[in-house]
Amino acid sequence: MNLRRKTRIIVGTMFLGLIVILYFLSENLLLNNDGTGAGSVSIYEQDVAIAYLMLMIVGAGLIFGIVTILLLEKQVLSRLTRLSNGIQSIGTSGDITARVSMPGADELSVLAGTINGLLAAMEQAESELRESEEHYRLLAENATDVIYVMDVNLKLTYVSPSVARLTGHSVEEFLSLSMDKILTPASFKHEMSVFAEEVAREGGEMKDLTRSRTFEFEVKRRDGSTVWVEAIMSALRDQKGRVISILGVARDIAERRKAEDKLQELYNKERALRQTLEAEIKKRIEFTRALVHELKTPITPVMASSELLLQKLKDEPLHGLAQNINQGANNLNRRIDELLDLAKGEVGMLRLHPEPMDPRRLLQRVFDEETPVAMRNGQTLVAQLPDSLPVIVADEERFQQIALNLVNNAVKFTHPGGKITLKARVERDNLVVEVQDTGVGISQDDQKLLFEPYRSLESDRERLSGLGLGLSLSKTLVELHGGRIWVKSEKGKGSTFGFSIPLTKSSQKEKVGTGNKS
Image (tube, rainbow, N blue to C red):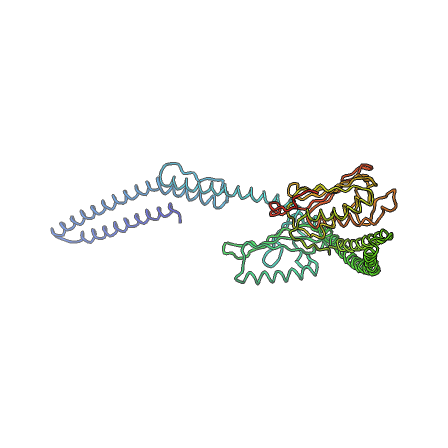
């Protein structure tokens, strides 16, 4: 019931009340008029006066009420009705762009302004919501990945248009499919078990409201083929943290799976080849050990006999022959040891026993040992060693073996009358040892293969040929010490072989030496 109707009812009720009062007054006057005598006339006149007074009061009140109602009608009730009708019109049409018109500066105008402000805020919010929805709709429709939403029963409620490229199904077709029709049997079984785990987790105390999971499963295509996809899923929750739907983003990983399968295939092949290689290396090591044993067995008595002959034939003409036999036996024994060491180094079985040592003492020992050999060849061997060198941490036997191999190599490839120089110095944080000769030199092409095993340089002297084990083994030993080995040479201009061994921090401070130069 609106205000205007209520006002009319009030006015009608007041008129009805006035009629009732007039009726009772007329009845009272008629009864009093039937009396006789002077007393009756006096009472009658009093009643008439009272009646007129009451009638005037009621009339005045009625007039005041009517005037008041008319003023309310004009100033308040009509404006309230106008405000109410405007709000009802907006509510019925749903047009929040409309506004309530209420001129003036009273409370109703302020109320209308407040309502219009709320409508403007709602319009702005709806506009921003539409823009946001349009933005995300465009993102979803143009994304290469498939974006989808499922309810808690795993029923699809939304899927982006990119599903057509992935599966060949239209959006409508795909939304009508159940999960067992979308996934292959194996993937469906796996996903159902995972879903059961998630449901159990959701009901437990370990619930993570921000948790997402990544899955890989096989999807059926419309043409009957299948495609592997990777999907990242997360739960959408209400304000109370309850799951209301599941959001997922899926992408085609067919090419990645092919690459992974190819990589796995290559890995399996590599593993098989590695196992075969390890077996062959093991056989080779066993063969090398057997060969070394077979070679050392006959050479041992030759070495012992030659040493005995050297002692017995000191002043005899055959002493030189005995010396050659002894030297040859020792060289052969050293080559046999190098062969075994090289085989160990190739498979990572060669071990060092490093300890603090004086490199100058060992270099002096190499010089003293090779000097007679150089003299017999008509060569000059010179040692340019400083008075002292830092203590290094290295395998003493292997360090001497490296230096001996380089000096021996220089002696082998230097003509009679040539010069060989053994040098040592400290360069930055390394001990550097070099062997310089005036021998035949090495071409650039040969230098590339110089440190490879089982390769030797072509020479105009057949006696200089060999298996090339010394340099290859020296390279292995130097690298095991953390150093490096190199060669500088030109064909016909001699060669310089060098190697470096890193110094420890303590060895940079501590130096030892004999106090005199060789």
